[in-house]
Image 1 (tube, rainbow, N blue to C red):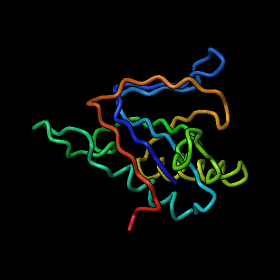
Image 2 (cartoon, helix red, strand yellow):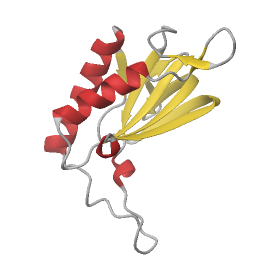
Image 3 (cartoon, rainbow, N blue to C red):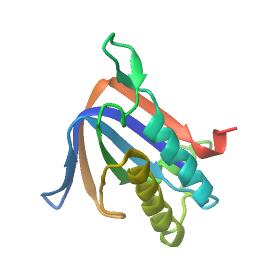
Image 4 (cartoon, rainbow, N blue to C red):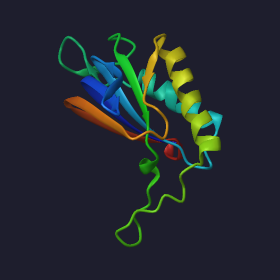
Length: 150
């Protein structure tokens, strides 16, 4: 699994002109699932996301987690994170998991993250044409790949 985590002042998902979900200060997490991903990947990433110290403390140092600042969470599925751009100019999505794996893995990640943070995870709609709006705070953007955890 691959995540792009953005520290935001606010973020929202709109589908067909209707706001599906929105958060204030917290994390917008884009989630890409590959066909080899497992529940262990989702668990590792949920713990990593919840405990990553990317919010400022009283001295202005990034030393606090989203849990410690009572931040909000918005997770959006994004299969394009699995793109391979090695050959040519058209990205290949051959590593992207199909719906039968991607949906349960995305849902599992969200469930585990919710438990880790003891707060709800707002979501997009899997497979929908979503408009994601955000105000990146910092900017702070972190990329995590569960295949690179060791």
